[in-house]
Length: 314
Image 1: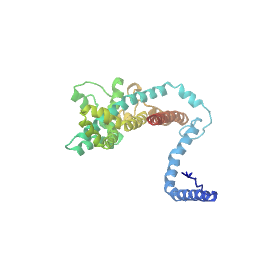
Image 2 (image 1 turned 60 degrees about the vertical axis):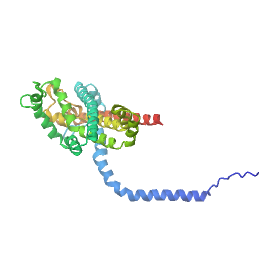
Image 3 (image 1 turned 45 degrees about the vertical axis):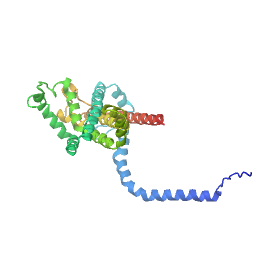
């Protein structure tokens, strides 16, 4: 019996070189043609994102004022002052406290609303519209609306629940009022993400679970929640980044002030006050860079956790 050993056919070197050259040429041609499509975006991105970051980084090392004249280089003095500024740390604490309240509440709220809108039979479109509609309102409209609702004498909140609470005048309730306004205003976005994810879960999984005798609770715990794990991570990450940057509704509800005893002054508001009220553009730029580092660290931490989870799943 004769055994034939298969031999590997190796392409000649000139053929491989020609193939590689053709691939490089196709990529170059694709970049030349596609570059015209991305050029407007790159130009706007560089003008409105890259350049402001670079300019702000430079100003953070100067004592520039709002006029931009007479700025001198002072090194790390702005950063040293920022790290010792009690008002900065208080405003960062307010933003963090707001984030800790909003993120878990809005995640659970959006999930429950999505479950309701997904399983309800009659008027499904109306429920979805009602849940998502507040998100379409401008921040000024939402802030002014809830400022009226929280009015201690004519507001609907105290009237409906029989309370006598000065929501916007008492530091114990001021941030809670901002949280309630934010939940009502922004939950629609996370609701829409959850609703789209629920519609993507295969129906045969639930049918098989029913045949095995699983009740509604078991189906939600063992099918729905695991299938929504990725979208839940996305919702939490987006809400953390958005909540740390809270500004609009807080300043509108308190007539562009910091709230009672500065209880609602957030980090973004503190930075704007330093830049446009105290006219310390250099110092405000330094606090902006610090805030940028915090936001970037949160985003990178989320990416790192997601990558480790994906590698662990493999």
